[in-house]
Length: 495
Figure 1 (cartoon, rainbow, N blue to C red):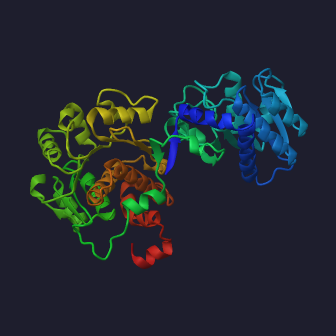
Figure 2: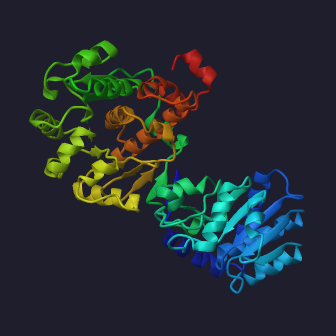
Figure 3: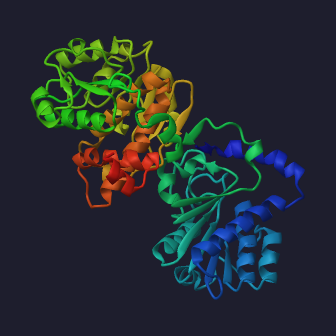
């Protein structure tokens, strides 16, 4: 599990560490880690053209000291000082001693220098930066993004909010971000995620001083043992979890087919279908038990999925109310979210867990837009409704009423196509049903579903543009990979 921390949490953790180490020691640790990553990314340093974009804060100092180390290894290092009167004096002196040079931002030829660089380091703003980049810095960030060099952000890309990922104006677009001590939340969520590139965490000794994370990313290693364990010899179809699905209609039968198929392929013990697209589901998935009637006629389940393609008429509202009146976990998606936004009292006070899976427009129907702080927004709605909120997006946020949250780090832009949300609902429903037998909290089951959905999308996208049905077909392979099975093992076992 990767903890994600706000700027305030990081600053508070830095205080005792700064007090217990010699002056400048923390900056030297950060600079050495930064230089080490840059050497690895560049492949070699001798003769490489390196440009440092240096602001007035500590990030500028980190860049200058790292630049000094790169210059000592033969790189041709130039620091562009965006505020030459406030550049870190120690870092500037170290760079010059190592053979690097520094020039003020207004000098002729600066943009060409940045455009031709092999490596550009962004040390303009740090975790305390607010708002977008100013004109001169924005222009250089744009040139760096358009150039052929490797772009590396120091701690956080300048122009993003380190705590929320919000971008208000121009920001540095990094291929890589070398972050110090802890992964800042803004690198993993919101627009910041798109500016951070690949994240490299450098240990500077901050770990013992950080609080227990309330927001985190799950890794494959976290997801597999507690959520996707294969059946044991003593298991049967009932011990593996039974999920009920109410999805699809005569107008949108595909939603029922996709949702049911995804639930089946995530390997619960049994899937019961109780929607109005019975004929299509029965033809596509003979493994499911299809009931022609109300959910109460379907038999015992350990979790329900309700909403995708079911419609928003009075009959659909009655079905939603019936499902929410049960004492098992319920996942509410799509049309059911529209109904619930009209009548939120249906979910408040439920004794069993409820998971809501809105995208931004569905979220707004509950009374307020998502806004720039996606984690904060998901937490507020979760607290208001007493439900787990899975807020879909480039980085999906999953929050529970108590404030604990997860940010999903898997996925691909190819998932932005019709039907993929129905697949996510099926996966999450299956894991909720399984969690009923394992005691796994609903927020973790939902986060694991988002993780697996993203991994499946990555697999399917390897073959080009994907359809939602491609996700259903690739789910067994994705489950196997998350469990840690090699492709050859998958083929032999038939998983």
